[in-house]
Image (cartoon, rainbow, N blue to C red; front, side, top):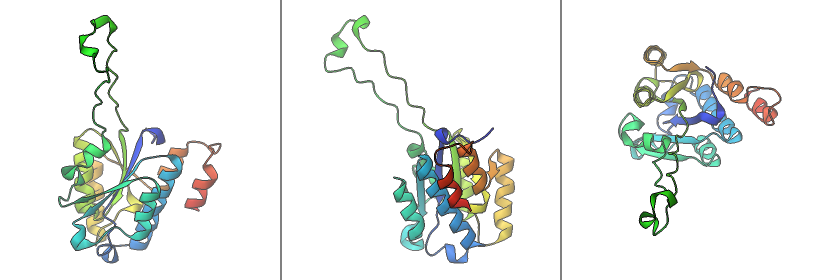
Length: 207
């Protein structure tokens, strides 16, 4: 199964000012996270950010937050390590819409009432990356899997303070059913073809 841009959402977990300096391969991880957010904006994929205990760990890095904001995204401040426990699932899965019948709809005969509108299903493919891979990223991804989302972890945009913790997180996530991908895999699967109207814009971001 390939990623589908029309069915994808991007979640960027905890790239925070006081955390990122101690993260393994932090420069590469940050660059790829920013690329992901910029690609999502171009491809019209919704973008969400999270920030763990921002009073202590600071806000997300300015360049990443600017990319999230530019894509029209929002950032969830959280205290649980899993963003799902603090409301991320509600952001990813739109609430059921109540059909608008008009003021006197209930008094109309059934054959004159409008049928209820179908519930909006939302986008089920969650492309996720973040830090630390073995804590907030992993716990969020595991809970999204439990919520029956398809979860795609962008490995070169994730890390931890140690390489061993990062790799252990990837092993566990793969065993739980998450797909492990890279930033370029996401880009080319969202595009699908070199004829895509934004191919050159995306290509410029990953060169």
